[in-house]
Image 1 (cartoon, one colour):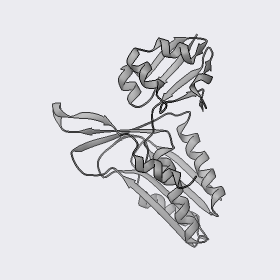
Image 2: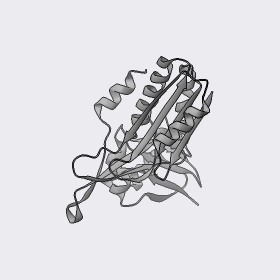
Image 3: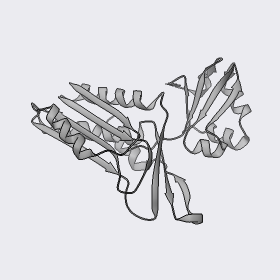
Image 4: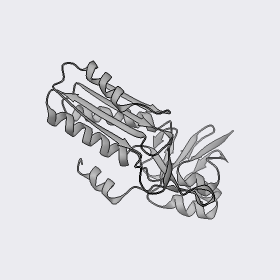
Length: 80
Length: 152
């Protein structure tokens, strides 16, 4: 089992895919370390938010993903 | 109070939706609405809206609840497109029915400002034709943040 990483918006373009898998358990430092350098630098920025299983985290450092969890990397939004 | 919130994968008619909404709220003395469309200017050929299912619709529903708590409404209608859109196509429709106009107008204004920059949508547009065509992500504008801050 693993943690599913979902990349939204321009982050999916940067990664060349909308989805990645990483081994569980996964914390913020581990997620950053597993990403390519340019993507890691981008998602470290304060404008990128993180959601775990459908809940936006108050701080990215709070990430504690388990087997079967879904983590979403959320760039700034633009609707309407 | 009736909240009617939906994400749409296909094109829709704002006029028709608005007609049905008005019919559903015969007691309302005021109905305000806003329709946002893909701006048919420049060399934009298409607009693509992506969303994230676990957050987008639940977030829109929570937003509608907040609008309903803040103003006295009979009903609130929210429609937002996802997928590929052509210039001139409607992206979003918000309508509010209320006893009095101020509540209806403010609820629509509030809901739109939050859909713009506080709902989980990502937008990119395709500019140019053929081999010179390329996708560009649309970043939020300073004005969007200022609009949102008015309600804090």
